[in-house]
Length: 252
Ligand code: PGA
Image (cartoon, rainbow, N blue to C red; front, side):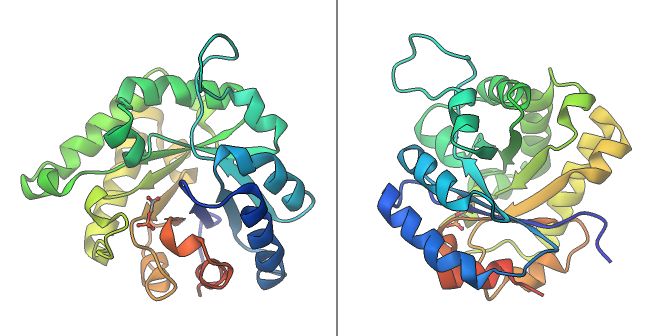
């Protein structure tokens, strides 16, 4: 018996126009009809949010965004404000994805500000953490996770983080076909939960969902979900096809 309700989230990155995204939803919804014991989220690119939000309205599938900016509005060319996301029907927002850290200069400080802005707007933050291959080889996995969590969550208060989701995504496993072994994933997830317990207490850390991300597929989801501290998955490539994502959602 699980203590936390699983969450299976699809991160569509820079794939799918609005029309392609809506077509996915049309094919996907019947495939997950009747799935009631887990949460499902899809995070399309910004230009598809409104259309996908419309297509998901009244269904059990939630909408998420892939990023946001921390200011409420202003002269910030190219940025998207939290209330623009909620206006499209977003419930979740991914923050600090490793691709944002790697290619767009996202820092732990930025993650911290975005997290606060998301919570303030009523969005559930999906905060991404994870080490690179080099860091893992240098034995720094836990110190990196510690730093990302400490700095990213430092100005938060437990009350506001009631629905926090953390995604552990080892950078070396993203889009590479390499998945962390069950033991590697479980030990990282356990570390994340204990760090959050240390910062905010065991009620919050016990309720918090920790997702695994990095080459999750229909073939490996059940093994991952069998581990005590894995509460769901953040899925990139394998979330782009309705059949493949539905099969991940329906893991047993
Ligand atoms: P992947 O991506 O499933 O394609 O490895 C996961 C992610 O980056 O969230």
